[in-house]
Image (cartoon, rainbow, N blue to C red; front, side):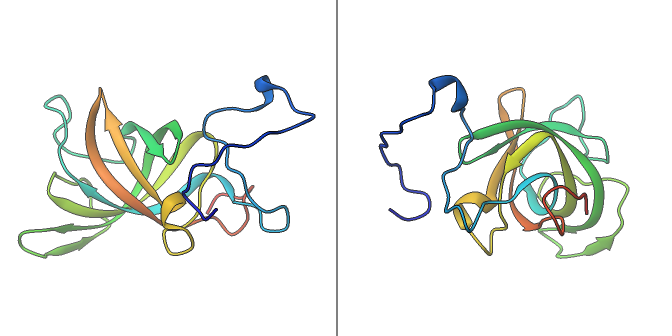
Length: 149
């Protein structure tokens, strides 16, 4: 099987309680990075009427492969309005229909990888109250899994 394919496995010496949604099977000598923070490029689709702009501190739920984790936008590095292609460095906020480069912090460690290394593990969506507000790809991980970049 290749990355992203569903497989059925028979596992021994492990209980059902030890397996959880969001776990990733990988080679022992090539472990998938487990991170709590990463840099990403996201496309803002829509934001709720209660918070019409995205700023640092914006909280959402990130869905990546089978994992869903609460997350927070730590910092906005760059925005680009899609219609005008105008870029802004270190913006205070971002509006819908823009592409944003930002850092995201997860509530719990999650198995993820960059989009360049593994498309299936590098794609995600951000959702708030059941609405998809953004789609994104992971561009950079911390230098080591336990370290914050």
